[in-house]
Length: 313
Ligand SMILES: Nc1ncnc2c1ncn2[C@@H]1O[C@H](COP(=O)(O)OP(=O)(O)OP(=O)(O)O)[C@@H](O)[C@H]1O
Image 1 (cartoon, rainbow, N blue to C red):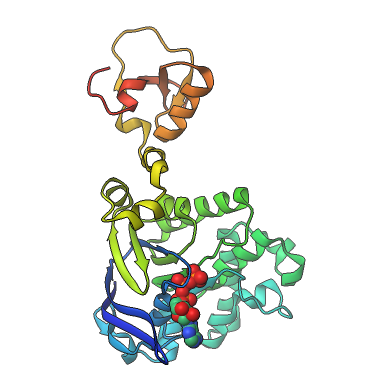
Image 2 (image 1 turned 120 degrees about the vertical axis):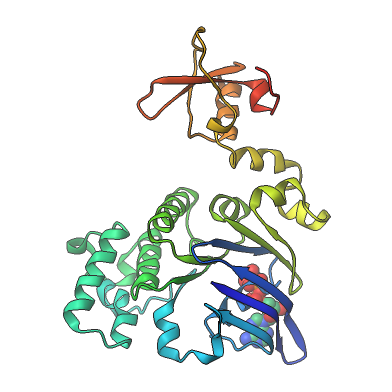
């Protein structure tokens, strides 16, 4: 668990972070969003003490972060950043093993861990372990960055725009993989991003910052439905909020289980989002879809009325 109590950071006369309080539960995925310069990266870096806070308290598992020495912070907190920060003259394997080496793990254990992580991040050992960062694509380099952040099996992962420089398809793939990793490894993640769709898709808790302060935080769906002011509303997509909300709702939440009836001509998975279902309806000019399970077996129906939230079909 990470807790910030009334934390302020000043750089000279400038206040970058202004009295913020935040609690990220164990295993929670928290996304920090806001306009450029609002203090997101500074907040992240105060958690692992790359930047020292000026006022307030930051706690990890109930202990002040200042009471941890450098080694135990390295062990507990992984850090991944946009341009990966990989050492250009080190191989992929050596880059991933950085923190375990600093922690003086035995060589064989480091090797095992590096290979395990390369497997986890979809980087075949034979192909990649001896490559250098300049021989990697952007997406591969980001995977190495995430593997390195996970190397010492930290409870906490801090990620600053880790997929920022990637094309939309690679980015979406890595987002999906991060979501799967999170589901399997239950890390506590604080994630900074400029991309609202990325934040909405990944976060359990969304934290909106503006000029060094937190203006609203909560579940993405709650912020979409009840933004506190015009700033939050426009940051969350203004008129597109309805589509963003539909992207967060599964077909299974709105479908009608089958009674005996005619199948609709077009199908959609129970696990698709309402925005995907709406897209299928628009594309095929139909107002009802057959809902299918993972084996493509019909299990229900979604009508446009139900998609829009009406109770009867
Ligand atoms: N080391 C520093 N020295 C002086 N000022 C700094 C330093 N780091 C950040 N700042 C200032 O603090 C404010 C917050 O910066 P920060 O990088 O945290 O914002 P951000 O929300 O992450 O922005 P972006 O989305 O553009 O990365 C900015 O005004 C920035 O200029």
